[in-house]
Length: 477
View 1 (tube, rainbow, N blue to C red):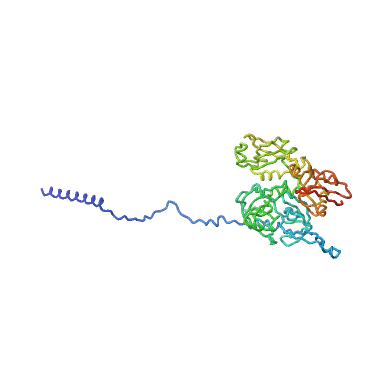
View 2: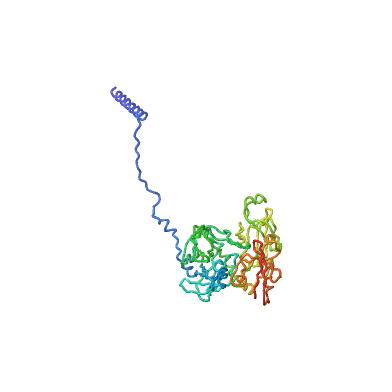
């Protein structure tokens, strides 16, 4: 009995404890405690160098490779003083006046160790004297070999050997965001290097006003200022990838973007000027425009890729090959083209008689044509205007048919630039359209050369300006 009582009391006690715990858990909220538990990581930790040490760029090698091959170009042009009619009226004589010198400056790049230097045409245009100063302060008088207003390039030469040079890089391989250096002489501050990245390619900013001009600039944010024109744009390996030419600015000074002629164009122009004294311009023989969304919708095109052919030149290379209006050109020699500037840049690499592969879309189908390029006169010949044209001191371009009609003339060639020579001396200005020489019609530069060959005496030049005014000029050969 006694053991049963003990077991009964034990059972009652245990039951009471269970009930007490249940009631406490249900009706009393306990305080939560957070305990920090130290854990061992599964991997070992190490200290890594900061990001700045991994991505710091060093341009010293590229700067050293290029700065000695970039020169300071100083030009002098002598302008005759105008006579004073009031002075002549009152005193009966004209005071003696010396020609007034006009100074200019820019930069240039030595591209051969025997003294050939490439610069911008606008740096040396109209100059009577060209002086070149090396990075080590040696000075030389330079000779103008030739110039090309359609690309704004010129080639000059100094008499020296074993000069430092810049090797050509590839502007086609340049990538957006790639680092580049601008080397030149801004504000006459010699041997200046600035850095930036490639912001855009094949940029057209409409600064070259000739009908056949090529604008396919490399856009960078490297600082370029007056005096940098004609200087070098180089990659991080110290190779020439462009010639600095212009800035986008409302103040005349650098405000964010600069523009350089790609070396793909520079190489071709320099080669032509060295060999022929003038550029051998090859033409595809098409009128083209960019493909916009509106154009794609109007013409039923699949997308906005490629360059649209609006018209075909009568005696051009494209017509001969079978290209038609309405075609969309997508590549030249396997290099894709999506803008007018890109297409012009690719064609500018070649000479008349060179063959290029043109891929285009016609009615949604891809077609490939082999096109033999022609010159501005529609032939395959190399143009050699020779000493006669050099004596005139002018360069020329054909005048499109629609402009001839607007001017009310049937033929002519336009003066695109002037150097000291016969034309400048008699007052012929840039833009003048020569319609005849010694009463014989002019349709090409070759016509001028042929007419004047063997002439020993007076020459009469007839033509019109863009406003339609007719002018006559005379000089002796």
